Length: 166
Image (tube, rainbow, N blue to C red; front, side):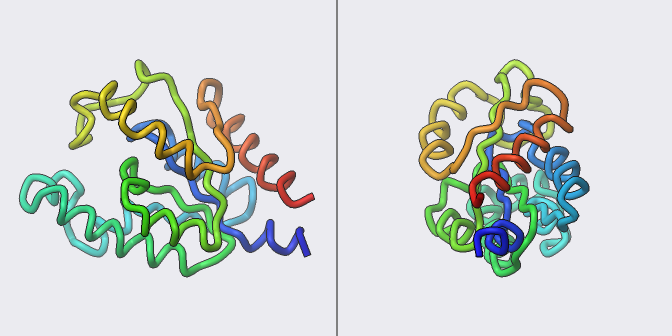
């Protein structure tokens, strides 16, 4: 039974903007033979706008509404890798949807390595990190350091997910 859960439960990546959720998600999808569901990409596909355009034209609240739709859609599937936006955890309903059939992994990366250009809320990355860190930690089953290679981070998540059910 536990192997079946490990195979069908979603692997959900959370963390700061630019910490590597999407690129680690791609590597993890390849490693695990799972589909990657990137909620930011889905927001852009559903809205027909880039995230920056949504923030500039409609504001953060409009983006968060799109994000919630994408998360609900992502959480309905199983056996997926789900890469979330950095602020997805700010909405408790998002987290509950994601943990309904998912195990959350917090991707942690040195703040000096996080890109801020083209990221609407990353102008004060230290304040953003300070505010969000307790939320990431409270929802994450595991913390994965992204301080080596993308492949190594993906392998750590894959191993942790497999180990959780053995």
